[in-house]
Image: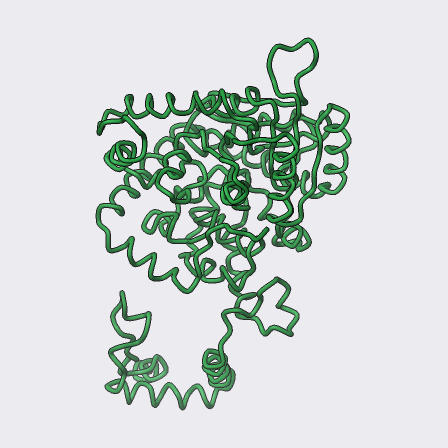
Length: 477
């Protein structure tokens, strides 16, 4: 089975970004949405001292979990098996899809109802199941909307944030049989509920993500607001959970601080509506729950990040989306412009490990390095430092000690290398620098008016009429 996740070529990143920038309506919608999410988050953290302490605690928990990840994964597997959960390991998206497909075929499943799961988006789960003749149906309202529209999520928390209510009304009237056009939000939600209730009742398998996996108890923690996650994990006779290997924590007591940070940073809520703790299939004396529970633990490049001490911090992420909500670049171009499952700042630093730097290096340069993402990250990931590291990797000489990642050196070009080599020679030798600056100041009238990407949004660079050296000489008494 081939990987079918719809990744756009990175060569088109600039064109997709420009298309959004030239759409005033979409820019206005995104700006309004980001301002709203920022204000909700601020309201949840009125005490700066409490926030600082909670962020430090959350960061410490995630760093500790990663430092002991190999042992925690073994402990998690042991305790999950003891609880009756079947554990599967997948190195690639193809392997993860093959495992899920094998389970589906064994139980003769015809339909799968899905809770929100970005990892399932990452591996192209829906496409793989549909190619095998199995319906994979999204039950999260945002995911349901983008699935109907044939699109990918544009935000990791709010998949349909790029859609207006008018867009959704038009979509429902077109795609849902018997539904008339209405802009009443309550009615639109009711339409989704009517469709989804039937799907829940008839699905053979429920699929979910995992927010945190607790090693000491063998517990899968899933948070949500709509109740669809709880339905997916209890109504169908088989539950498949899928998650990246980095989502493990050691103890149950480590979960509440992370939940507090997650919900307040993501949606500005004190706590999400539902917190589900799943420790196994239905027991003989229980009235509901699945007969089987499976957990697929996915690598997909995460061990590459884990092996590097600096890049390991990428795996601390708890998928709150706060970095996106505060990023000036994401707020202007939206999630689809990135062309990857995870957009925004977190996408720029995790996608190179999932897809290779050769496919994703432009994302590392799509940042102002303003540090807004670092300031709001609830687990204190040094995103800007990692972005600089990825930029250096993208420009590294393939056989050098700086080239450590898959796809390193992808942005390196012969012309660019030659230009920087000349620059280094000039700025490395005082005599050459003085001579070059003299010629530049005297020949400033010859400066080109078109200077590539620089002059698309800026005035041309023109050397000063006099060098600083000359000005200082003139000021001498």
